[in-house]
Image (cartoon, rainbow, N blue to C red; front, side, top):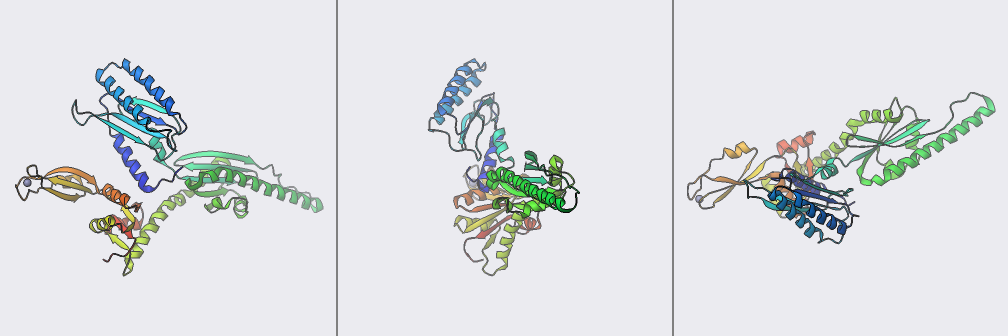
Length: 414
Ligand SMILES: [Zn+2]
């Protein structure tokens, strides 16, 4: 799967939100999900069937709209030889802009950030977005294992979902008290069996976690005894996974209960990973700020200017930034003036007149400041980091720098 940047994910979330607000007048919005390996000729055949069946739709208007939507879909898929790597998603339908007769055909065709797994066709008064929403829900996966001498359970945690992927038992015999020569021999047998068990656990961990690649964010190993340390210290786990082990945790149980214990005990630890990344980014920015010729910029004006000349390496945007750009226009001569406001009521309170005609200026368009900055950053291939206000650093970015900061590519003077 192609790597999806935070910028692409942001754009994608934005599109999803826009699509979720669209409503058809009847059940006439068509959604189609096509997996990569689906033959487009089969999809075309299915669309012709649907077109035939739509003749039974009672409402003349709905029937006409469904049929036009299906025809658009048939035209669009003809442009592809086969679906792209992650498949193809199409949303087509007549969207009303106001009262009856204001409907306009809207068409959205894109390759989603994750593979489409199931073929779907749906006709409803809303677009069918659940599979896409599921894709962006939670991508990060944590690998967990709870081990002792007798058994091992391996699981993944994705969002709130725990999946037990493997359970093994050792067959290592218990302690034996024979004493003397036979005791030592027996101890060695046990030792060998225990080592074999560690190897088996590691093989399963490697098999389950390696394919997750970058989605595997961290690994936590737990268990009641010392086996977890033996497992971590031994060289049986592949280094790519070993590097991601962030903790070993004592648990009272093994098995699924043990897995749940690990999660309970490492919640803070796992949350910290995201937070750590955010802190690091803001600290880099603050570090530049302390230098005389620091590569920093902040505030709406200054960052915008640096963005458009391509001087910004990393753009820091506070997640709490909800300011909007408002364009006001004179209804008579078309004179325009832009305002940045924090709330709609602030915009409503704007009472300015045209310098030419003395007419009251009217709001004609509105754009989130964040969207504006993301678009500019996109044009300049600038990295974007969204920073929450959960950390002291994030709060500082929001409060002291207006939620907009930049680490620059080169020094521009201050
Ligand atoms: Zn005017």
